[in-house]
Image (cartoon, rainbow, N blue to C red; front, side, top):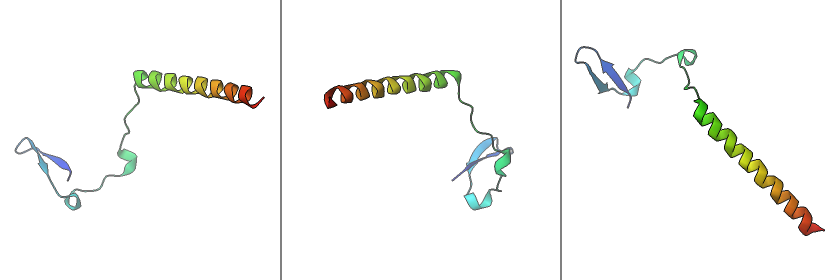
Length: 64
């Protein structure tokens, strides 16, 4: 169940999802990726490409 902030009591309350008004998807902002996360993802991608290249070379050597 979603939590909605109640300004009168200054607390969050759980309310059934049918009682919460719907929001347009255009108004919802997605979380931005941080530079650190992007560096990590790029590094993992580079490592994976190196592994696939070495595997391809190994397969060629075994096939000959």
